[in-house]
Length: 170
Image 1 (cartoon, rainbow, N blue to C red):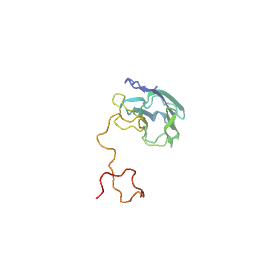
Image 2: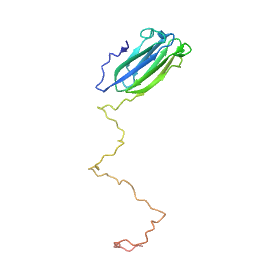
Image 3: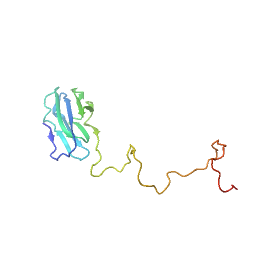
Image 4: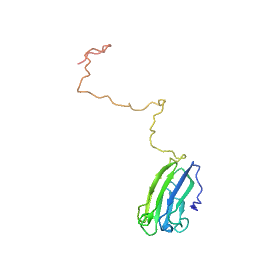
């Protein structure tokens, strides 16, 4: 059984996370941790020589975890991964229906980050919206939006304006 965090979950939506491992010939060397990068807490972990005890065996664990950013780290005590020197082991991590990490050929450990830390609803982001509002602002701006420019290229209009000026030009 995985070790689950004793930290209280936030009100965020829960997502399914599945860790699948096919062990090599030395399954007791395999362990992993899942760190919630939004809180810094270890969300779940498997220690060496606990769950993975049968060689060349498929194991699958599915957990409900908060919607967040994570770092999954798989470890091998002997430093030769779970493939290919001592068997054809592999691992796969699925988060919210998508494979976010997989492999087998690594040394002592391999880490993958995935997910997203959304903005805090109490302290919304200060970044501008990517979608403009439909209604214009009700307040006038103190400065014009743009300054007039002088062009060295006339517009090509040679017609006089419809209203003559009250002063002759100099």
